[in-house]
Length: 145
Image (tube, rainbow, N blue to C red; front, top):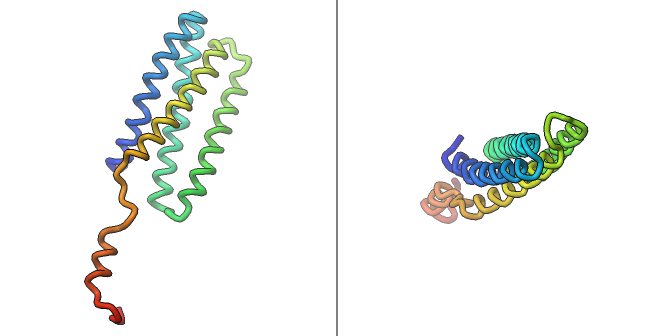
């Protein structure tokens, strides 16, 4: 993992963890211990799904840059479907409060997405390769190479 990838991961994971702590506290106040457990599980599921997506997207960008935009769209749909399946699987569980779980999952996904958007907007990523432009400048116009 490159340094800018790790930086992006941290810029997304930290706000999501903070939102998770707030969700656990709210779940505990509103629904007791089961609400806190549900909020913690929801935040963990959302963080795991979104971190996996970020990792896959970064690997795709390095390996297949021409597929980056399409992969991003497929990835967001896949993350949504995974979250929906997890919500459906735990719909009738008695292990934790399902409403706290669902709201924490939704909140964590929204916080992660906002933080990821901000991280990409603030990143100093070159979109022009300096080596390629230097090589072009050094070759005279009309040169056969």
